[in-house]
Image (cartoon, rainbow, N blue to C red; front, side, top):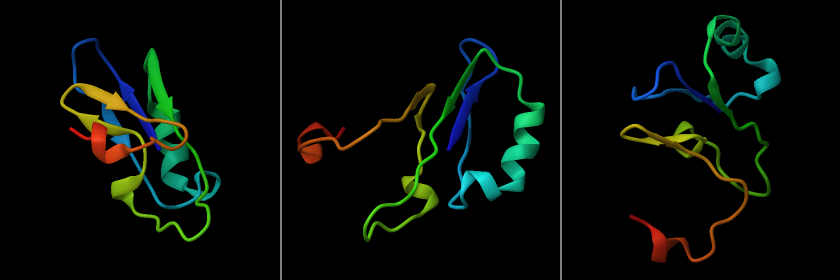
Amino acid sequence: MNGWYDNPGETGCIFTSILPAWSNINLYRIAEKVKSKLIFAHVRATTGNTSTSESNCHPWQFGSLMWMHNGDIAEFPKVRI
């Protein structure tokens, strides 16, 4: 749902939740305290019969990299690392 880097070269911090952003009190509390030059925010609603879990909430992190996308990734199994 949100991610940020405090200092260059450091690993980012990620906050995810399955609750809607507009009703998540923790998101408001975190937003008041975060000071960063780079913040990722990904707020979305589920569509169709999609299940919601924190493991499939953006952004994702791999080492010092943070990543999110908007939309589908065609033929994902072919590009999966």
